[in-house]
Image 1 (cartoon, rainbow, N blue to C red):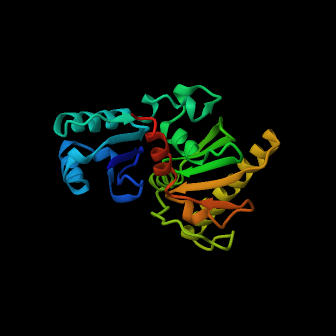
Image 2: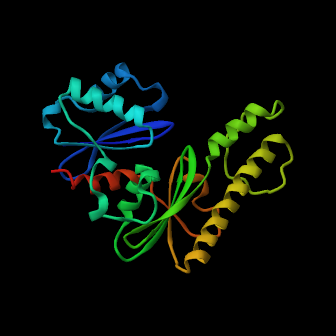
Image 3: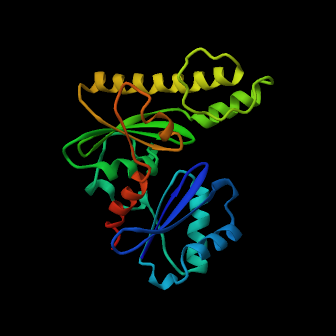
Length: 248
């Protein structure tokens, strides 16, 4: 049995995976609320017998939270865990940018798709909206745009007369009240941002790409752009499974 985890700025997701690499169980919790008591209760739900755990691997963009989990597992479960960047990834992917500045979640997503044949753009709707460019087995770099939810929260926090709005697909561009106007701005605004960045990547690289989307708002945008988007919300766990084979 294996434990794989994805520690994001907003949410931490941890998976129990069997020897056939099928997900048996998963847990999630707020990264900001992470502490030893939460870890104890959550891990007790995830797995009863830690002697059966062979590998533990995380990708993390929150170093302090990863270190808290690492210390908890080593102290309480007597288990050593790894972070993706602890491993030698050069055998899996060529990174053509500053390695230290690429989030391990973005490398994990890229590695999950590598096939030495296709080019990919990976769009992750997380705390930030990120675009990662993968050409065959090369990570070429990416784009970081403001996250949709954090942008929406900032707008409603700063603008007194704009209420909390739940985003959803909208068909009219011109809103007839505040809520529909905000929904239009975010839905059509981000749809345009997505198409524009994809088209600029194609123009700059002179290559064609398969576009994979993942994360919280991927469902909202999967059929809402001129470019074809394929949704895959398991891309990170697939990458962790692939990378875990480097652990002896």
